Length: 179
Image (cartoon, rainbow, N blue to C red; front, top):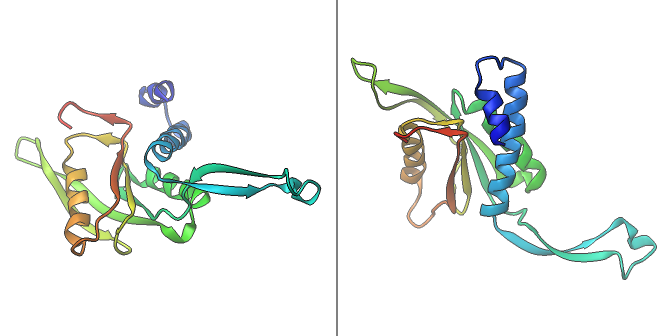
């Protein structure tokens, strides 16, 4: 993933290669997050060989729990495409009825010297609560952390007492020292 990221970062990389690399990197990053952060459940799988070998054609294994509610947050600007990629992939892995994509429009707030002082929210479309959900923020760059902090704050403020998200997870490709 670091090698793909290095290619993505160089000035010579242009579209459509940028989107192709973003897809490769976010697929790998999402797999890592799912493997390490999502709950698993034991399942008994009946394979296609069951018609001919009914006793031998099953196996029990630990799989990602398909019933894990998950929200992909599009932090509109650079996070739009990564959020779409994650949302699309999770609909194949999890129960699609439990996967949602929310949208938050944010821009940098700067002072008179053009120093970043925070984030301004332009609007949002949040499709419901996040109780027991894993909330993902696929945003390529963690610059100061202001946008992410404000976005997480939006969800925390809207939660009813005791109805907390299971986890908030940022999926950044690059972070700055200020972050």
